[in-house]
Amino acid sequence: MKTKGGNFRKGAALPFVAVVFVVITAAAGIMFSFFNANLKTTVLQEKNIQAYYHMQTGLEMGTAALLTQVDNPYYISAWVTPHLPEKITILDNYLSDPLKPPLTQTINLPNGSVTVRISSPLKPGSMLKWIRVESEGVYKDGSDTEYKNKGSVWYRADNPAISEQTVDN
Image 1: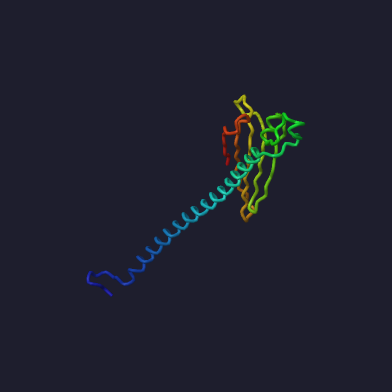
Image 2: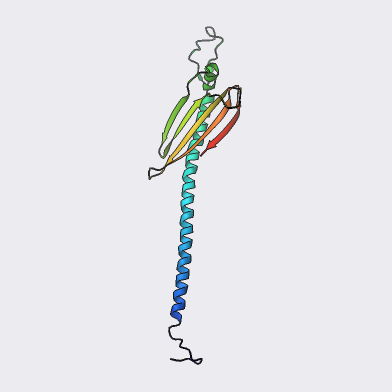
């Protein structure tokens, strides 16, 4: 059927609709791929943050253990051993024995583990005695993939209020 201008208009909408459909489908596919990549990045960041929290918990537990007072095994009484304190800390042990081996403890969690290590190595560039608390947090997701985060805190042995923290991913 001819129209007034002499052109055939029958079926002209089909190519236009097909082009619009292809453009909308391509735009939806691109948006879906961006959404999927963003979701994967967010999940990866969340798992790395969980490993960071495990590591930070280990540092706090190591610091608490370092400064917690326990009974001195060499203290008998104020009359017999007046020169020894009744309570001591792990920090006191490191001050009295410079060759003390590192203390290491691994704590298993439902979704990972935390390894804490307390040692007294020489700190590069320092003549003072430092105590180092190291922690490695491991987060395990359901697919047996491990996400790790390491960190450490250096405490000055003569003044544990002075510290330096480092975090390694």
